[in-house]
Image (cartoon, rainbow, N blue to C red; front, side):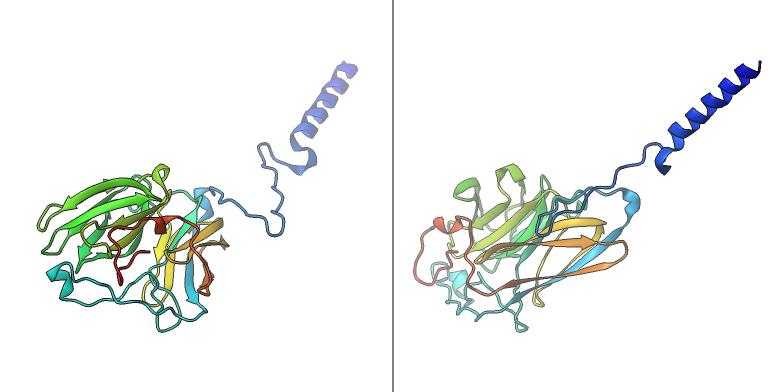
Length: 279
């Protein structure tokens, strides 16, 4: 009987050690090693309970603002009523840049839901000039002008769709997929100076700069991300940003005017004449 009691005590001790050994609870995750200095860190998918923060940023211009040519809009009597300059680089009074799209790469969520994006053909220009859509979301393309427009979209030099839109016609409903290209260019075959851009992202965490050169992305899950900017004339840049719970991460992009866009959109020329915007 004594030997049986001793054996039972020994088995209980072994069982207790196997459960509590090294101070770890069952199912505890191993802590991952930090990324090496300068190494890119992919956006992780944090637990919902980790919370959210926000990103506030600015896109600065440190060089000499380019002189923008006047657009030749005389081919259409309505368009000719309003003189305009090219808009491929808009430097604000505070030395920041407007119309820069900013996207978080690799995050999930943040879909805009029922708020559909709208591309308007207004005063013979695309308005807004730059937007960011979520992969597969429907966008509306409208014509507010009393004249014929033609919506011709490209991914690189590949045509995605090409559709005429007379005055007073219904909105064109379209979706873009990342498989077709992350940067979609809008052109008009009737008015070749008309240019617009739609960036396609896999999540809804994005922003576009305005007259202040600033952007804000709210309700971003806690984590470390790649943040990518797009300026149609100078191209793309990337920075890393870490979002902490209930905090604002402040970031800054800067262009000096020497950058060159790496993509091939300038290969697309539609009826170019002097003074036309062809970027």
